[in-house]
Image (cartoon, rainbow, N blue to C red):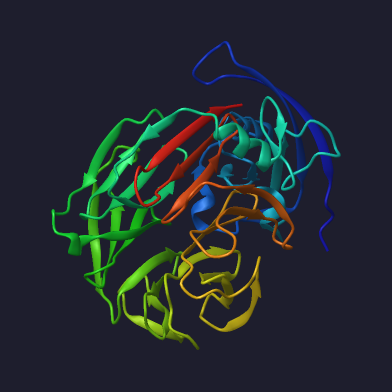
Length: 387
């Protein structure tokens, strides 16, 4: 049995890019443990030849989205993670220690109930209320899908385009489609090897893209095209599998080998699907359709379901994602309770926004900013506030 030691260290760290920024951060260290994030893509990077545990903590503190790190003292490898430590898993390893920076104002204000930044501690509701007053950055009215990360926002369109926007609204087209509406890309998601996965609504097609450069402005190259048995709506990827949901049929989801695209499992639905969205957290794949939430193991074994608000409502379009702390963001486009609702994993409601969310949306949080990207029926927008 490993002994876990808790040490509090105050780091005064000069900015890597500037001599003006100095942070004082409290870091908790858990010895003899390494970190496993709930989502593969929450591993930001692995850094080699890092000379000390304290330097690893400094690198995490300096990074705008790093909230957990671990350091292997024998290999001198420092791994940075986007995920909050409490949202992941600690596993035994005698040569590794986990580092947990703390930005909360005091011990009674902790995540995930609060959002702790370098300058303040806020609730999700306070963030939504402030974003409602922020200036809108207009995106394309044809945008259908959205995926945000530390570099900016990737969007997919009704004409097959995949675009990238910085957090100042500057756009770049990464992959081009056509003007044919049959190329509509309804969902875009991240792939663990620095790529993107998409589904094309009318063409029953999924494409896996690889990022061939290390920068955020790199070129996306398609490396796998998968023909699908039904009309797809959304997708999510892990290190092994691609999960795809389907519209207006009795197939809720297919699970594919990520390397070959072959279907490994088919998950049937007891009712005619409407617009099911898929997300993942830890060892669970979650589908949301018509206010019904179903949970599956990573290999497709049914684990159960839970309802929110008024439960099943036919014809209600939903969307769902998680942030770095595991908070669940669920959108209802219509039905009895329209808007965006935010829940803890135990079902406690944290916040509500009346924003229309017909298609994809995401609230993306760093230590310095909150970005809300929304693709409703028209007038897709991005709003930004600084903490």
